Length: 373
Image (cartoon, rainbow, N blue to C red; front, side, top):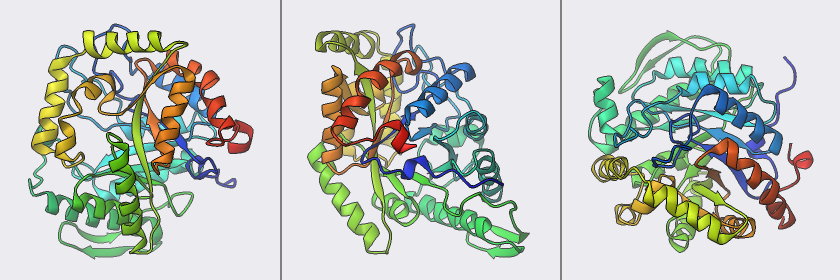
């Protein structure tokens, strides 16, 4: 096999960028406007090639099994993440493409082989996003018998990732006699192309963040209050350092970038307020309150408008200069990168590419594509 491609997500850019949720209908905008994101394979392939050519570091999907209802049944149509990643890795050159795996729904022996396979397809560019679960209706839809106890779910997740990591290293069959998995004479060949597939995780609870700092390379955290986020980043880095690890923090953002502030604000109001799918928004918030630990609960009350605009992401709304300013604020808070979402990724990203990326390069946050590849 040829030499593995260097992981784009580990390049020298001070601030990394990726696309989040293009495999899901609506993307991250909980809106009823007719131009909302169509998650067809053709659109995902177009976006992946645009991102790859522009030097964007990664593509990250959401693993979703049932929608959120409302008038649009937001996220009612979803491309499965492993097969999605396989197809995109086969059609790109530089970008890291992640698969999102729910520990409750995917057996670790199967996952180890799936990830090794797509890493072969991408010649070392696959990534794994680990989700230990929060959406109870999805557990019920799949008939999964997972405990409501948050601590037990993360204990299960730790054993799950331990099994996956061992399968990626061992060349001979082994037995595993754990609390949740009893494996006999198991192994997984081939191994991934590289020994360290990038791992994402998003967690807000104490136990979730202990899991993330122990196992992930990148942890997603909300950027609702940047002063609070900056404090949390320092604490999380210290927590990782205490066990001999380094971890970087990413967040999620949504973009409405137009030549003038008036145009950006008008469209923001149009899709995220006037034509929001409030039924789906309220269903999402209810599930966060009832089942999630990914957001501190005192912050969820601030999220309703941001949920409709971009699933709770940090708003990057305005002119190219203003959007670049927002990204710089995220960097100054200590974040290493952010995901991006648009109402229509394919139609809107080229304007961001041509007008925002050069500003970020001029400010030293990113390098030109020929240097970052």
